[in-house]
Image (cartoon, rainbow, N blue to C red; front, side, top):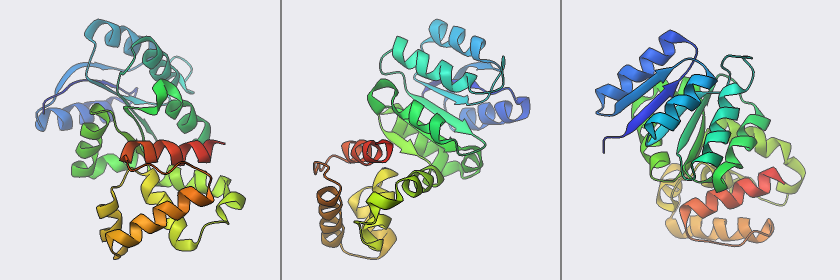
Length: 215
């Protein structure tokens, strides 16, 4: 499916690289900008299907890109946004995931862009309303909640990390070389131990896991 996208990054080479990559797979980049103000103006003018933006951009080179993304998601309900960052920033990740009810949103490290097939899959999933969180972000959030997670077995912690990445039961089973029934049992145990409501919907499972990690 071809999407209309806006790309925002103050690093010209990276920005143009993203534009070229997206165009090569059939997407239309309707605007390519280098600062937060231009990003907001472009989104309001073009109403894209998805925004890809850096966290740190002018004017302050701190979290302007993220703040603009959150502001735009409040202004335009349902606007899908993928934020790219060079570093894992817990507050950045949580601020983004709290916006717009947590749907149609992603937080990835820039190094993931090199895995083209996975990156394009991420674009499609977010545009369809899914939630995608970088595995390294998940690991850091899990470490911050180390004590509560001690209620989980090592295998359950491993499954939780994959659930929080948005993986399906069959994908988790294949990754861990176990049966689908075993994955179902682990997920049931995880939600019971963390006092989270069990839900078979993949996106809701991601939100439930992230809600626990935010607490």
